[in-house]
Image (cartoon, rainbow, N blue to C red; front, side):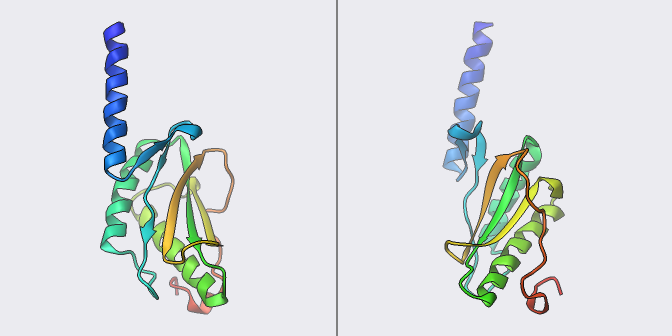
Length: 147
């Protein structure tokens, strides 16, 4: 039994080291919820970059491997209507990508128009009982990427 306990501790340490060196880490204060890297967008674009897709591919593996938490997709910039639309469209791009890769929409919380860098979208893991919409209508529907 002692060998198994040592093995589990060594394995956990190895996984933590791997995750932290590949851009992922464990949030010690939140029951070991994963922390994901920020997603970067180009100015005036709502399309996922190649790097953002790589990050999301890794995130999908982690998200689909552990269903004990939800994911908040958070977009930034509420300084004007167009800015809010960019924020919404960027969050929607991430949402579409996650859903295309079989992430259950009931585990997603859609948030846009927050204060922060408008060229970033964050994926934040949160407790499974946190409530929030998995989609909200765009602020300016005629300019939305869903049309």
